[in-house]
Length: 350
Image (cartoon, rainbow, N blue to C red):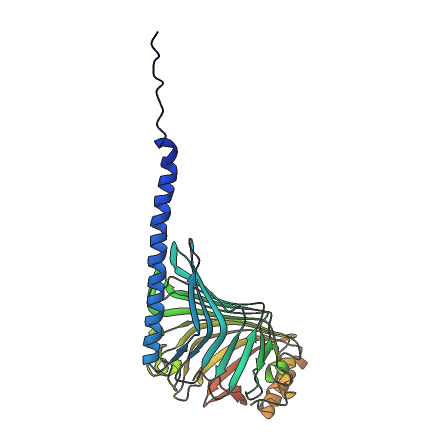
């Protein structure tokens, strides 16, 4: 009797999934290497361009890690200084993006920052989290956000005091302005949010908040946003002001101790000296304590006589039984006015 040979089954089917995985992994690794190389080249090219424009851009070491699914750029001992004298320094900055979505980045300063204010010295910023995100970086106006969680501000001994000592949160957002469903050509929307801010000792913020906490949220549309560029001594707002830049549709809320206010303004601009011009309407609740608190500040450029007059005017209204009061802040001639009373210098943009 003749033995019939046993048919051997091919093992190709067993190996095929592993081969496919290896091919995919090799392809993805090639993409990751290409992406990180492009990121490295782009970072170096941007640094060179900024240096040519007068910026000081330095870092001691740079590494790009995160294979296979992330691109993580790690920089140590970073300094970015504008020609104007403003600067940011950090012991470490980490910027991370998903390798499959390289147009969205998150930047973290795990060991805090040091901010240099031109002519005013340095301020150390520390907290539970300091992070920034940017999405749509391939678009003309990316969406940006900056978040500080429990930040603490400490002025260096040779620097001027910083108005805020600490806060629960500070947030800044920027996004393209929409008209209907269409992105406006040269406008962006911005929002600033301060939660439970505490002023420095004997400073105007502490007095205004009656030794309590200041919470505010401001929103506005910035027109002619493409002119917000340049870091020379004139500042980033100088060219913007000369080109007719405006803050439009300003809206906000403010709470300082027992005093509350909602505010609005159709248009604000800056004068040739960089100080705001225009007016802001406020609907206030119990404004007297905040205005009176300004009188108690022992430092800062607050006009106590003007604040006293404004407090007296608000007090007269309260005495008449009105806790809600409509007020108008006017920025003109470099000053902030409440009715006929000058309170302080107008906010300075540059």
